[in-house]
Length: 135
Image 1 (tube, rainbow, N blue to C red):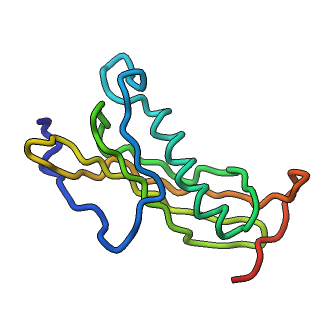
Image 2 (image 1 turned 60 degrees about the vertical axis):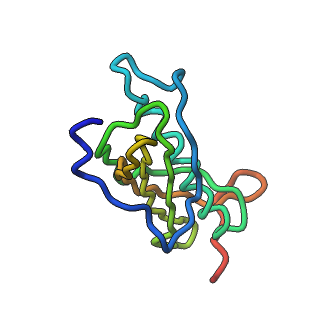
């Protein structure tokens, strides 16, 4: 186990993950950790799920407001992405995404590996911005 084990935490018990996935060897970078771009892609997918539900339409990512890699992700980690709408504008929806890795099956530990905030815009059927419905 790595030195990161001291940052062990628990999965949020009051929330359901938007996405849960296990990275594979093809997702590794040359250093042997999961490629940051893979994590970013999964965060974007996870963040879009509550944005689509709130917009009641398709959405497009318009901004990555913040993205913090706190820990590396490894092959075999079960990675859970928790996404929550935190702000709604006229056409935009901002989502917080927290990412946790469950690792080491013999001595299970959960660590927060990434946190991000993304903004999506609601789109109509022609790909143009549209107002987000009330409530």
